[in-house]
Length: 224
Image 1 (spheres, rainbow, N blue to C red):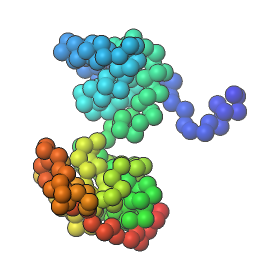
Image 2: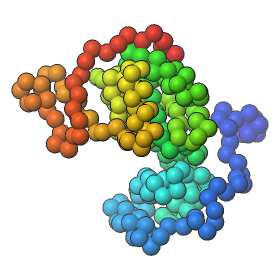
Image 3: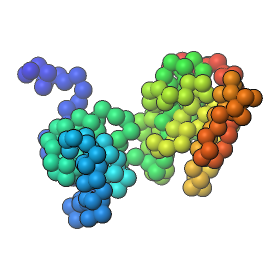
């Protein structure tokens, strides 16, 4: 154990980190507390509501520094370690302050061989930052992530835990960045399954804001 503490596999968290949320803002409103109470009612144990409560906290504070994790733990009446474990397991929970738009570029196997790294490197050059960094104006954070579950439309990225952008090309990336600079998020796109195109009209969801068809993916120039 002593060797692990001296040479940890991953950086250990600070024991007493500097708070990043002002004390007078670090609270849940009565309305938010009522919503969290409803979350707890949906599970046998309060810990079952931790993911929903973390999501609510992230929407409120923008990210989840240790003091916010403690706030969640106190509200749910569960140990801090339990909340910390969940928050650090999922990349969708932001432990650090991010840009206004977080661009998660998939580089898992299918996206890797279809140009995921090509898109990641193009964005790095376009934004003047490396993966894991935020542009100086605070507008974009660029991240490399594992499978987004849209292998058929690779390469793909996700914007701020929200809409996907499929079948990426440099031109499509350019348009996305321009739209985001204007405050315009990409629409929710329904992709047509090739086998359903004729028989089911593409098997489209009724809430789709835009439609797109699968296409033959590109071959990557870079695989790392």
